[in-house]
Structure formats: structure tokens, C-alpha cells
Amino acid sequence: MKKIVACICAMVMLVSVTAVFATEEPAAETPPILISAPVEFAPSPWAAEEVIKAEEYGLLAGFENVNYQKNITRAEFAKLIVNCVTPALGLSAEELVGKNPSQFTDVEDVYVDAASLLGIVNGVGEGLFAPDKEITRQEIAVMMYRAINTVTILVEKETGVIPTDDLTGFTDAESVASWAKVGVATLATNGIMKGVSETELSPLTNTSTEQAILLAARIFEVLK
Image (cartoon, rainbow, N blue to C red; front, side, top):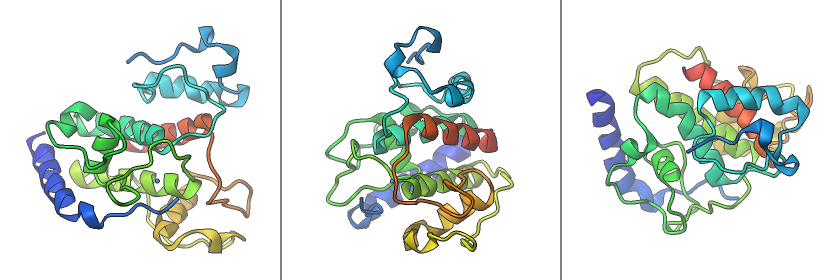
């Protein structure tokens, strides 16, 4: 754990030096009880089993009254991804953040701050994070790819995920931004984030909360 804390401290120092230059890809408690959840907040039948699995993994810690069908926001996905990596690191979001000041002026969220300190998210510029902005599939892919790298480096874990930038076979590959190409290609090639069809990635579309939860559960299984 001392090694992880030391690494994180070094990362915090790097963030403080580079934060002014960091720009995000421009527009990346008690879990709800599914049985008693209001109908409007219940997951779709096709997602219910994996949502329950995600709850058992602890990935919905910090969420309340989840509306599974609405598009997930940047802050909400940051929370999901932090819940994926903290068990592997052996530290909670609060322990990761400690007394470090937030990098953002438009959100007070320990999960966002933890994701920032770990290098999983950046802001959108000028000290802003845009927490309520709906996140795109390519932003999600980049955050998931960074999460894998973070755990790989900090705990020297072999995940079996092979990096690649090969998007051959996808008809909308040119729609993937240059900063997202490796993340999207790696997750697609390794079967973590599948295309919307055999030949389409749809990198600029948004993702529902239940779809994002399923993706988070897959990342958790890679990292655990």
C-alpha cells in the first residue's frame, strides 16, 4: 500500500503541474434495491442480471435512485470507474483524494477528484469538468483504457488486455477521434466494449446508465 500511496502522491504532483494544460476530449452508500425500485428506475430486463452483479461488486456505491434508462453523465461514469479500480488498489476514493484540492471549480465530488488524481479523467479546460454533460462512447472507452493502465502500473497487475489502434473492419472508424483511437480499438478488440453492430462503433453517441454499468462490470472483472 505504501508503494501505491507514493505513486499516487507522485501523480498528484504531476497533475498539479500539468492541470492548466490538460483538456478533456471536448464534448470523458447503499446501492438501490432492485426488487423494490420504482418501475421508472428499474433496469431493462436484458440488463437486470448484470446490474445485480454490478451491485454485488460494489460498483453502484455512491448512487441513489438510479434511472437506468437515462444517458449517463461524465461525473456518474467517473464514479463507476473509480468503484472499479479502488478494490484493486486497496484504497477508497476518500483515501485516494485525501486533502488534495479539487482540480475543478464546477463540481465537488470525491469520485471525480479520485479519477482525476489517477489520470483517468481530465477536464474540459479552464478548470472545468462539465459533470452533467452526457458522456460519449469514445470518452467511456478512453476512461476505461486509462483505468486498466492505472491498475496495471500501480499494482503491477497483468490484465491480459492487449493495446491496439487497429480499427480495421469498422465502417465508422474515421469518426473516432485521434485521442480516443487506442482506447476504442483496444476495448473493441478485447471484447470489452463491443460495437453497436458487427461493423459500427458509433463512437459519438451517448450511453445509457444501464449500458455503462454493464461495461463497468466487465472492467471490474478484468481488474479484480
